Length: 295
Image 1 (cartoon, one colour):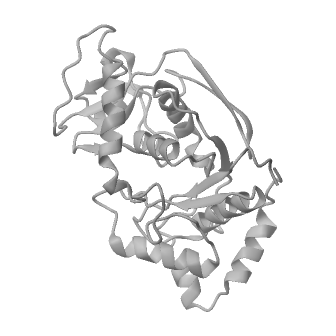
Image 2 (image 1 turned 90 degrees about the vertical axis):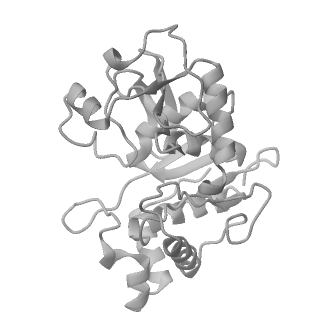
């Protein structure tokens, strides 16, 4: 148990683009265990910004399946709480306010380049590193020169806006699961999207805003998001918000060593429930494959 002067707040943030599989469940179980061993709180947030793929039925299924697994949270879209709303699609004004702060500081710029333009210029034939929220390194030649006057933010945004990373800056943090992590801005990752041309906040900005404003003290998520953490650390610093700690879990794979994804329907919690698998069996297997460090 930690000192009473420190109040642990963790979170789980399912994205309702499909049914939760075992990989999601293990990460969320680890997050719940981390909150419990710290004597803290766990918040559930619905990361539903992907308009094309998110579905209300998947949001409901995630809550039902996590309850079935035995996970409990103290705040969330199903029970409310002091930091409501807990659905990202209902928090857009908060993201817009953060975007306007970045704009006022001259830390973002509009970008008309397509993803294909960036991929071709970066010499990346496919998605960079295969990470869910990763982007190819944005070429410096595409970046407007320092001091170029910024156009105003339109009421409805119709172009991508990118965060200008401090080229050559070293960003470091200590990960609770992986140990020391280090990246160089402009080399390991480049200028990244914070607002999309369909007038939707990008993952990096929305995640940083929510974690800061909900008082999250430790983010537990998959190790495929380590590069996203470096980006978000830059946003925390730019917005003058304290950054949480991070704990990136190893990813689960199938029998062929392929990372689990939502296409693995047979390994979804819903399918396992329907086949009669018990929550205790699932959690027992989680405990065998991952040992959670004490605080």
